[in-house]
Every structure is written in C-alpha cells, then in structure tokens.
Length: 409
Ligand code: TRH
Image (cartoon, rainbow, N blue to C red; front, top):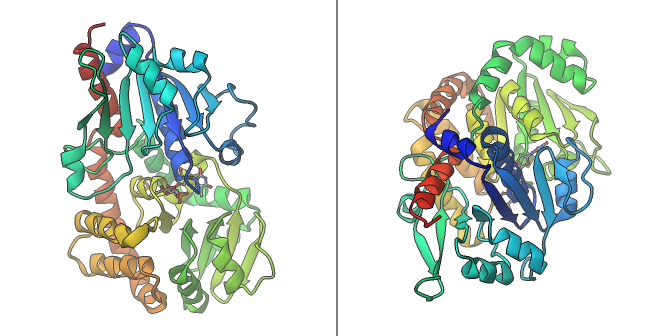
C-alpha cells in the first residue's frame, strides 16, 4: 500500500464529485469514467460522476451495463445528470459542498450554486479543473497553479489546474495498477488470444494462417488519410485484417467498399488484400485487449491515444482537430518526445504529419509497413518508460493529501 492509500483507508473513504460535459464523441466521458473507476476500485473513493449527455453515457456503457435513471449506481460509481449553466438542486449543491474533492473535467464550469455553496462551506472541497492532455512545455508551468475564485479573505475559494502529461512536473497519465501486466499476459498468449478474438467476431481462425498477415485496428476520424490508407491496404501485396469499431471511421469504409449504407457491426468485407471486420462498440477493457492484439493501431482524441501507448504497439494518432490548427503544435510536441531518429521513426513521423494534414497517405503506408517490426521495439521501450512514472490518480491523490493536511479539518 502507498502512503496515500493507507491514509485514505485508515480514515473514512474519501468522496468526490466529478463533473463532465461531453463536447462530442466519447473522449470526455471515456476519460471521466476511467478516472472514476480507478479511484473507486483502487482507492475506495466514493465517486459521483455528473454527466450532461445521458444518451452518450448510455451508448458508452452499453457493452457493460444497462444504464437506468439519474442517481443509479453502476459498477461502484453513482451516475448523475446535470445541465451546464443551470443550478443543481439545492440539496445536491449543499451536499457536494461537503465533499472532499470536486473536479470539473476539461473546464466544464461548475454550476454557480455549487460554487456558492462551496464558498460558504467551513471546509470546502479541494476543487480541481482537470485539463486536456498535451506534451507541450507550458503544461509544466501551469500544472497545479492555483486560481483564486472571488476576493473574500477568509472564505476565498481556490481552484487548481491539474494537467495530465508525460513526465515530471505534470499530472501524468491514467494507468490502472495492472494495465501493463494485462498487456503482457495478452501478448504472451498472442496466438490463442488472436484466435479467440476472431471467434468472438465469427471470423474463421484460418484467416490467421495467411503469411505476412497484418492485424490493424482503426478508431479514427474520417478524412483523406483514412481514405488513402484503405486504398493502400486493398492494393497491398500482403494481406491485412482490419478491425473497425462502429463510428466515424466507417464513413470511409463505405467509400472504399462502394457500399450504399454504413455497414453494421458484425459485417465482414473483402476487397483485394483487405479483409475488414466491423466491431460493435466495446467496453474499455475489450478495447484495450484489441489494441494489444493488433500489429498496429490507429487511434484518436485523447484516451485511445494514451491506451495505444500502453499497448506497446506501433500506432498512428489522429489528433482531435482544433481551430487555427492549434492541434498541429500539440502533435509536434508529442512527436518530439516520442519519435527517435531511426529510419523507422522518421517514416512514422512523416506518416503522422501527412495523416493529420489530410494528405494522401497511400505511398507513405507502403513505406511504413515494413518498418513496423522496428517500431514495435520502440513502442515497447516507450511503454516501459511510461510505466516507470507515477500515474495520474497517484499524482492527484498525492496533491489532495498535501492540500488536505494544510487545511483546517
Ligand atoms: O471519442 P474521441 O474522439 O474523443 C475526444 C472527444 O472528441 C473530445 O471532445 C475531445 O476533447 C477529445 O477527443 C480530445 O476519442 P478518445 O479520446 O480516444 O475517446 C474514445 C473513448 O472511447 C476512449 O475512452 C476509448 C473508448 N472506446 C470504447 O470504450 N470502446 C470502443 O469500442 C472504442 C472504439 C473506444
């Protein structure tokens, strides 16, 4: 047990409210659900997860549980519905003002009456704004910065910025205690795990016997990069078995296979050297397992991007596009820490850049594919480096403890 764990379990369980507003897609909910689960499962923190988009949450949890009504407990987490910019029920606002921790994810802005109740509380919760992940240098300067909220001398309330990141001086990355071991286990039994994967999706296991077969997973946004990658896979001299979870990547699958409609989960398509299987949206654990079993993963946004790194497989990051191309600086910052100077590293870097600038990636893929074995070694090294650093929850609880000790309890 770590010191923090001992302290928390020695007293009562800590309790926390986590507020999430889903901008689009699944990244915000995915991150918050993962954070809530880890805090609860590994540190017994009692978490209320407040989500604004109940339908997105329902879809997201579908592979795990049937989501019921507001207030229901799912797998140890209490799920609540809120509407940004509207007040909470007064009873909720007063109750949450007594919590140990209140987190607003990705600057989603807490309800004003909750802030007022926290300001009025004798011992307000520790209030964090948990920000998006970036490898940019400024993150270190902003991580844990206090932001005083209101002027009242004795009852001034402080919000702290908490920035995930890749190294010292940042909040780290989410990583459950057993994540790396899980990947090791799946990869030690790669042949049987891959056969089981194919069986689960009603694919003939003989597919795996094709020489030089490459297993790919594709969880990306639509665009020219994906369009041209699919063309390259079709015309390639070697076979590819590609797994595509339901969602935005299917737009380009429709084009590549000249389909009239979006293919349903369970569809298996064949064109030239490409076999493609559409997967139903999986639980986060099953998604991790898929990443572990593929030779190369295409991922996106934030959470799947981090999970691909822990899977220790070569991967391509489709970064979430931002206004004024702000995402390209973010991409460059990560490339600077991730890519080594080898030929394979350079090939990967060029591919990522072209992919994220909406360029034709056909020839680049043909060049990249033979580099995958070297990139595999590099991906493993990167996973090991990440695993040596404290994870986000450990950092978050260390900060919580440090703050609590200085508070008059
Ligand atoms: O869905 P994303 O594109 O999410 C985002 C959002 O767009 C968000 O607004 C933006 O701010 C952020 O990116 C940067 O990609 P991401 O972050 O990878 O989240 C996807 C989640 O879905 C992740 O938790 C993994 C999970 N997932 C499953 O649980 N099952 C699945 O089958 C798949 C494919 C993904």
